[in-house]
Amino acid sequence: MSAPTNDKREGNLAAPTRHPVDWRSAAFYDGDAFLKEAERIFDICHGCRRCVSLCNAFPTLFDLVDESKTMEVDGVAKADYWKVIDQCYLCDVCYMTKCPYVPPHPWNVDFPHTMLRGKAIKFRAGETAFRDRLLTSTDRVGRLATIPVVVQAVNWAQVIHTQSVLPRPTLFAFTFYLLTGLHAAHVIGGFVPLGIVLHRAGEREYSSSRYDGVRFCVWYWHYLGVIWLVLLTLMFLAD
Ligand code: SF4
Ligand code: SF4
Image (cartoon, rainbow, N blue to C red; front, side, top):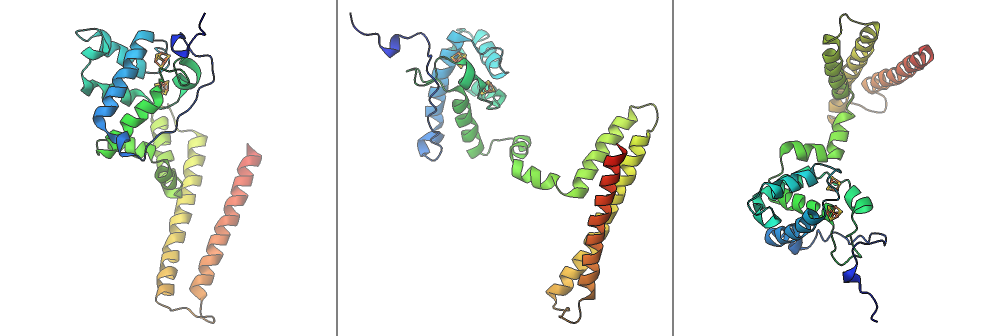
């Protein structure tokens, strides 16, 4: 009796093997090759449907198949593949916990990396929406969000929205506006002289014996640091 071979196995009980994404090669961005691989993966998923409850990518795919003329993946227009790709947010749950056909299984189903490849092709073609580019630029958003006045403006907009549906203003809202408004005024008020000092320093108007503007700026920012540490401590104590 011959030993069982891997390709006869129904599922895969071994730990998933992750093949590296070959994102530097030109073949990775070959649109036709990608669509062929996506069709292969979609066809296996259509026959399996185990991940239907995980996210919107799978129901979108299965609806497209069920509503097609053939009720098979070959009946789905290639242009509709992007609807499935857009729904995957690359959480990896289907790969890591659900799919029995991930490598080392010979079917080599890697749904998330296939979706990732589609997103990369779309990005390289310049077809990614501004919203998606903004949301995925976490470093830029992080830098923007840590600018104090920007954070305060966003928080103010949210509180104004929340307060508008409350029957009357609250002490919390008053304190919030007072403290954040004061903080914004301090920061803006500090940047103006800082800009003037930077400009004068660029013009070489300061020397080792004449640097009053720099000194006043340093005092101001140190004063701000101390006053806000005191205020924060008081707020924590009053909590
Ligand atoms: S990796 Fe994508 S397709 Fe898989 S469960 Fe997460 S969102 Fe869904
Ligand atoms: S990813 Fe795997 S488990 Fe999920 S539907 Fe596709 S073949 Fe089935």
